Length: 133
Image (cartoon, rainbow, N blue to C red; front, side):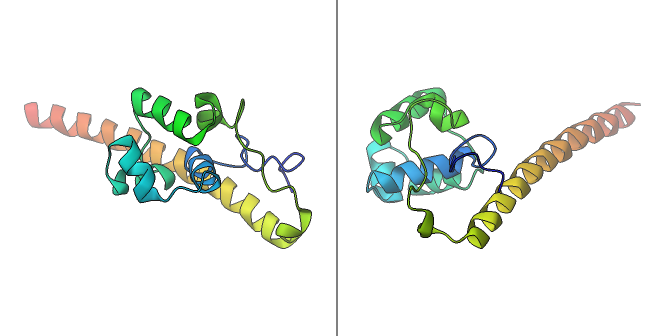
């Protein structure tokens, strides 16, 4: 297992969405309730938790306040936030290994999405230049 001492929400183990969902659940809030309190749509909250997008700075500050965690913890997993489960029996070693691997795959996927976006931008630039000629 690559998580350090149960660092379930650390930068190598979890994403922004993972930390947000964990803090929301710990606060006893549904996505709909959190969305109402933030003045946004439930689909926006779901998008944040699914790591499809991230909140703007003003909403991020509000979110951290509602969830009683620091902005830094939400963004990076460092600072004032939540710790992971303390009961070692809450997840078998196999489950924790799978969660760790899933987190690694998510990081790789995010890097690949960014790579695809850069390539698409380069291609669009080349195409627009060739059309201009």
